Length: 120
Image (cartoon, helix red, strand yellow):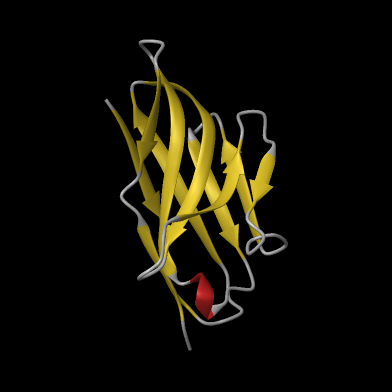
């Protein structure tokens, strides 16, 4: 069984920074592609950033220049460093990952989400 657990959310003032973590545990061989999504109240869930196993990254326009996605393959953990945060970044942030399990199957998993609130 595989689990994704996000952490690092919280309340931050505009212009501040937060780093989110997404740790995979269980019967894991490796994380293939990993994404960070977010969902604000009343809005659809949107893709914020993506990273491949090799480290290639893509960002939503709203995240470019402010957010950085990274990964530690040895720890099966993905990070989202968020700088220059704005009130409109307020949302629940979710980790989504395609994970190779030890039974050689590739499956998609979601974390439970972590709340990020940007407010003075």
